[in-house]
Picture 1 (cartoon, rainbow, N blue to C red):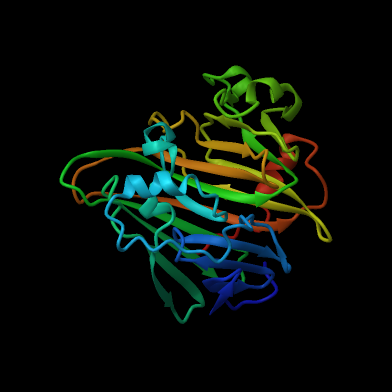
Picture 2: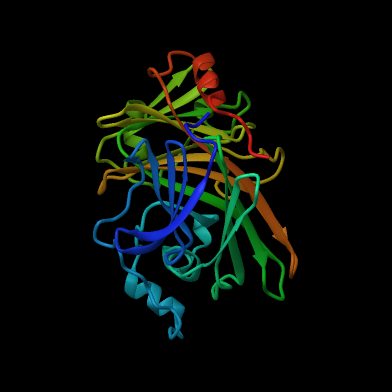
Length: 331
């Protein structure tokens, strides 16, 4: 339970961007709709846990006059804005190997709804993507007295054709830490963990950074080396334990429903990427590939939470106990 029964929202500035600050007890989320509808900052007891690229802070991309989106993407390259965002999976279908410009770098409209029961909902909606004809809405819900929040990802097919994409949420958090993931006994991957061979040194470094804690995979993130691993579990959760200077260990839980038997964009429900260039790693969680007719939409409800943890988990039971901390669901 947080220190306060109230939730508040204020409009301000964050690292040069227009921002909306959602606060509840020790938790603060900083929304930046100008750049991909992101949760750009995630603070716990005054300590920021989210990575942003210092070279891009405060910048925005004016896409209104851009006629050739592909050319603009090639000019800009892959911009690591930071924070928490919604991508479309699989990555192999991205044009030019870069996230879709309107969804990743474009402005989102923002609408705030607060009711008398101290439940706050902030909805950020993209323009229709000119590359995919997808419109993304990210709704962030926070309730007074509960340290958990919800990110509802809505993917709308605004085209005249059938489309197939998966919702893919990516949180860029500051190093160092460990990520705990469930493994499936009948997994397609060795010891229940997929190695993304095309990502940096994943093959070479696997034995150094991938461990086991009974039925749990443990990915250690801290080195300046690029690698990525994932799990095809039948449970939709991941737990990060972050080392926060001046604060200690902080737990970060991400949880979605598991859609058993349905395909996932990368063959995994949860993934971890570690950067070699910047001090961040990514906690990524997926919805299934959805086949949408024109006008149809798909929603994925993702529950996230921050909380203090006393020590590194020593067993699968402790990991699962940490998952339940502050797990008081929003109405």
